[in-house]
Length: 615
Image 1 (spheres, one colour):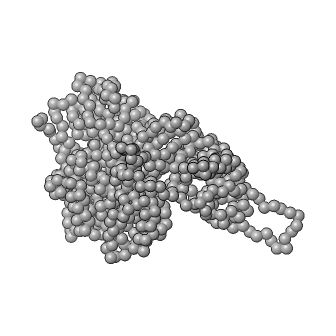
Image 2 (tube, one colour):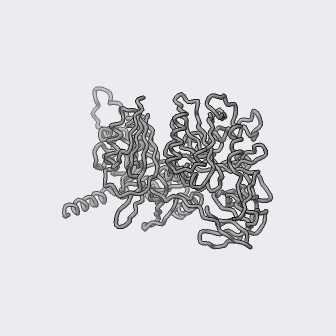
Image 3 (cartoon, rainbow, N blue to C red):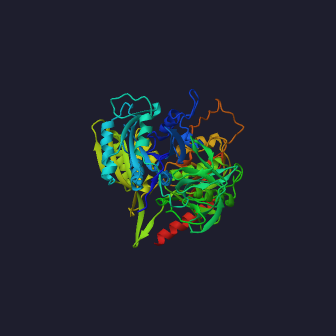
């Protein structure tokens, strides 16, 4: 057995938790208290959430690295996402860490994503520090939450050493950590000291040549492609000739033009990469996450990063509507293909396949939210495209159809227990647990097909009047549970091109909820509203009032239109059926039929009914 040496000058930790339990806010506190910023310097909140979408939605989407210096030791921190759809980011991030800080909300306790990230951290053999955060909340119950954390560790088959985890209580927003509930914390020093004391320094073998595992990719306008990862063994210097071992075991020669390490949220240049450190290297063109960078003399591949399979797919295609090319700069299929390929390089959980149809691609991911973020990012970059309804990915084993299942956790008021149970039951969900704590709220657990949750989240918020909390966790594949209706309403489809007219829209409002306002452009086949009944109808939203030379004795009635709800991307994805598409441009989100012509749709419908009659 080779003796491994620990690099005591470095600690690599990941901060893991369920969404909105305070990870990014805690990193802010560590930055401020490590002396990274001068006293009185103005610093943005949630500094690590650098993407516009992250700041708008208040969630972390991509895992990011940073570093602080504490008592002469460099602590590399990886801030990970908490949303289940971005689980791939967590998995690749843990490959760089030697320890993890598990944050748990003092009121909500361990939730589905807490289980997911903790399971991955325990499997990776990381040293876990548990921090019960937000103990200043009015509904905080830290003692009960601690019991729940112990139960979770036991449930995940943690060994005795892992069960004896170090524990701290914190108020991340105020930058306070303390060892007991009674004491009055002043700062985060106890947490930083605990990291130095409990998390082992990265271990390496002195005799092994240089090896680095690529866990993330970046891009710089000046340096080109950047590879980010942990140096496992050995060291490398700037301009040293090395090789990259890719997925096909091919050896690609390269030269490191620049080596950088993390200093706070930014980079600092260094002449060499030392073992255990997380570095950013440039000078590499064709590289993907999971590749190994090593010496030419002793090339040796490290185990590749593996992530769970995608469970949801969507069809991406070029925009073929009459309004194509009017609002977007990037409309060609080659540009869309190039952008999707770039996404697969940066995001290990996303896969892209060519479709049978021309100018069309199948994009697979962990959930519809992950794909919605990708689409939103593309439209902000100037892309114009059409996407279909999210579909779950089925499997066939032994002649049996299997579908992805979710473990659904619901916390809502007792009054809404009936409506939630009824809705999930019709969607083939099965209740597995119900806890009523007698305080007016209930906690339910369901086993439900992944397809049942597409479109249900919005409905759930309406049913619980915005007070319900719903979380889900992928629970593997099970036998197909049967069909159920995805939507009980039809579409109001425009039968001609033009602009929405107040008179026409006002007279169409009794038919259902309208999506367009007066003056909005429409075209044949565009969905302009939701029908009250379950069938589609063709309508004319451009019809004007017939004028005559007869004058009324009174004034004409003023037309007052009902304000419309803005069409968001998530709402559109949940609304459309299989024969409908979402047209996405930098300025608009429109819904349309796949077949725009009303007469052709009518003929196709007739053929379907005739075929059913013959059966």
